[in-house]
Image (cartoon, rainbow, N blue to C red; front, side, top):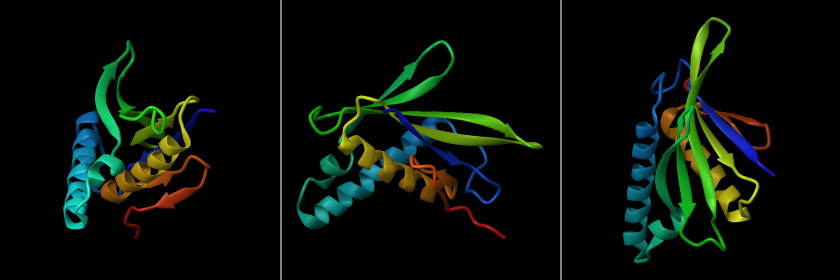
Length: 140
């Protein structure tokens, strides 16, 4: 069963717009910090923390990221896209993480982890796969 999570950028977020290049940059940062954790533990933690290869894909309507799992028994793939929508009197940019129907439990766990990481870094409003909302943006 396919599931989708959104990170919406609100006025209190670190930025108001986002591109796929920004998301790739954040994934690289995630890999760097997990690599440093692995060095401290003397273990190749970055391979377990980010078990995907990032591929940029494009169809006739938009570009998106295809995160292909390195071990298909544990991790198959995730999809990441960026877009914007009109809400009342302003435009809201968002990152969309999709767990495809053929995904494993490992994919779902990593998607939740990545969604929370991205939301914290962007200080956005996270709409989880289960419908709940977590607020990481600075509110007045």
